[in-house]
Length: 181
Image (cartoon, rainbow, N blue to C red):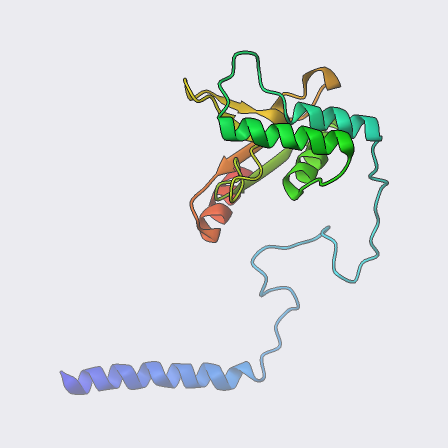
C-alpha cells in the first residue's frame, strides 16, 4: 500500500540521516578505506633514485636502422616505404628525430638490456595518425612483422608486445588487470 511504501522510504531515509551524522565522529583505522594495501610502493614524499640511462650513439644508430628494415620478400605498403626511407635518412643525419622514432629507439635499447616492454591502447601497433608502425602487415599475405622483436644481430633481447584495444580506458585497464593476474 501507499502507507507501507512511505514507511519503507522513511526508514531508509532515517538510516541515511543516522549514517550522515555518525560520519562526523567516525574514527577509523588509517588504512582501512583502501581496498588494496600498497606496502613497498614509493610515496610522492619518498626520496627518488635513478640509474644512469645513456647508451652509446652507435647502438642507437644500429637500433634505428633495424626499425627501418623489413624481411627479405616482405611486401611493404608504398607509403610506408617513403616513411621508412625518410626515417633512415633522419637517423643517419641525426636530425629531425620524431616522437615515434625516439620511442622506438628507447624501447629497442630497453629490450636489448633485457627489459620486457608492453604497450596497450587504441591503435598502438601503427600509432595514432599512423606514425609509430612498430607492427606492419605484408600487403599480399597479411603477415605481421614487428621491428622491435627482430633486433637480431644486435644481441639477445626481451620480448616486445603491442596490443591494440578498443577506444576505452576501462577496456584497457580491464585487459591489463587480467594480464597481471
